[in-house]
Every structure is written in C-alpha cells, then in structure tokens.
Image (cartoon, rainbow, N blue to C red; front, top):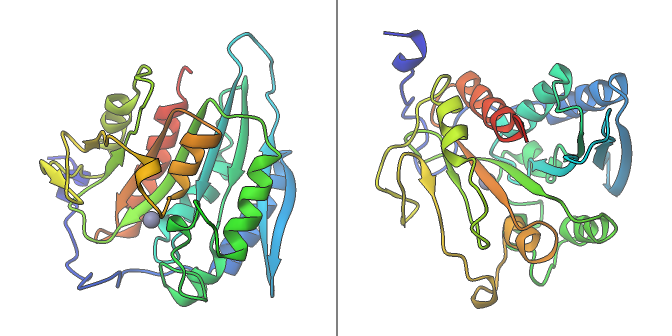
Length: 264
Ligand SMILES: [Zn+2]
C-alpha cells in the first residue's frame, strides 16, 4: 500500500478547526519574496493595520491563440491554512503554463489567520459578503475585480474541517467541458478523496459536487457566485480536508491547481 493511502483523519476538529495554524505574517513575507523573485507584479488594493492585501499578476511568457486568463484566490477563511501555504508553494515552484495570464490573490483575510477564525475581525464571513458587501475587505476586493478583464477560469482554494477527504464544487452554468475528473485523478495520488454521496448537504460523486446554483435567489453570495455572475463563467472551488495532517492538504491544493491548468 502506498504511504499516502494510509493518511488518516486526525479527529481533532470537534465543532470547528483545531489543527495546525500558520504564522500568516511569515507566509505573506515569503509569498511577496517568491512573487518578486519570479517577476510578478504586485498591487496593494487594501490595507488594514500592519496587513496589505496583494493582487499578484503574471503576464504570459508566450502569447498564442490559446492564451487564457486565470484567476486564483485563497485565504478568505482564516481557519483554512493550507490555502496560503499552497499559494506560497505554487509561487515558489513557478510552474505555470507559458501562455497563461494569471491573477493571484494569495490571502483575502490575513487578520482571520491571526485569530484562527473563519471570519474577519468584525465577525463577518467574507465568503458570504459578495452580494451587498459590508466588509472593507470585500469592498476593496470587488473594486479591484471591477478593474480587471474577465477571466477564462477561476480557482478558489479552501478547506473544510468536517470533510472526509478532498472534494470540489463545479458550478458550470454554461456546460463547458469539465476538468473536474482530471483534478480528482491528480489529487487522489496525494490526498484522500471524500467519496460520500452527500457532502455539505449536496449530492456528490467521486468528490465532485455539481451544484445547480441560483445566485439571484441567495442573499449572501460567496466569492465564487460573484465571479460567475460578473467575471468568469467557469471555475472550481477546491476543498482540502482540514482534519488531516497539513502536508497532504497543501499537496492536494497544489495538485488540483496544476491539474486544472494543465494543457489548457
Ligand atoms: Zn473556506
């Protein structure tokens, strides 16, 4: 049996996340250094106290008819540390499709990480604040998004403290060709997949939830709903299982991003 298949749930998360935490200041310093080293431009679109919210941008190295604009974000929930760690790893590995233009937001809720809390300091779940935003963070993020072109693909990196393995959401309102199975095939080499037929109350198959989303019926949009309605008709919300050790969770998110971008 391969080592990874023996990765077991830790059983630590009773009622919320009780796993490893990160020093978000150190992670963001390393993110900024890796981005600078590899030639990304960095725009600060919001500041609060000691923290700066960065949007990183990488032009295609080679332009072609197949150039695509990719949006990647993470760190919107401060109790989901594998997201910023995966962002750091992806930036350090610097293994991007040469003709992709990438917009990368490595941490949307840094203050949440200092508290090990899902919400921001004011108790707002930022990932429910994209329809009528109340938080300064989401207002600034939307103002930045409004200045960007549309994206061909968006990837939102998350963790779920209750899940039994990795899974993803694929809202695909225009029925575009799917990469979901390819993503799961890449992730299952490094992290267990949640094979339950119901995840978070939704039907699931082999770690894939294909929700029939109705944004106009929901008052509290997550980031992905805003993206689908305003910026990007195709994307994946990637959920690593945070009741497992941190390393397979980071590996899962990195493998999922690489698989989603492979041979675009
Ligand atoms: Zn989340």
